[in-house]
Length: 177
Image (tube, rainbow, N blue to C red):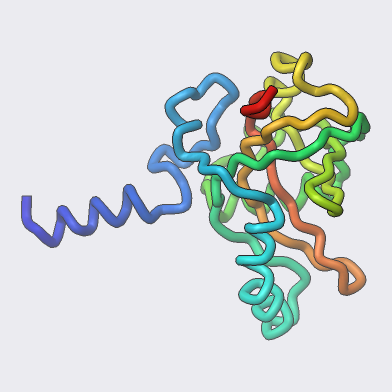
């Protein structure tokens, strides 16, 4: 194999924001979970805000969609859930079509609800993969810490307020539990 081809394949595999298969991991896709690195929702937001919000302003749009940034974030589950709002469904669907290049209905069928969490002083409504909600029910305890394995969908600006959208792919107990 030529060195150029090897470099191309290396870059494709290591730098691509999506898996070659173009799918998001299912709840039981244990090999996929090794890509998730410790971090925080706030850390991702701090990293992406200057770039994305200036891009949104420059283009005159109301949203930015980007890579996945697989992250393990420690949050506190506040005990509230709600059905996934249609505005979020549409936004996630656009992300699936543009980033994963697959039928959004397949992915959206895995996400039916959002959970309210707190990280530091910020509150987030996070869409959660249904298997992670059902199969890890014992970890979803009101006002208790939980580690969420999330992917960043993007940010949508409504009335000049950024709404960051992350998907919870699965959950783990906190290391000190």
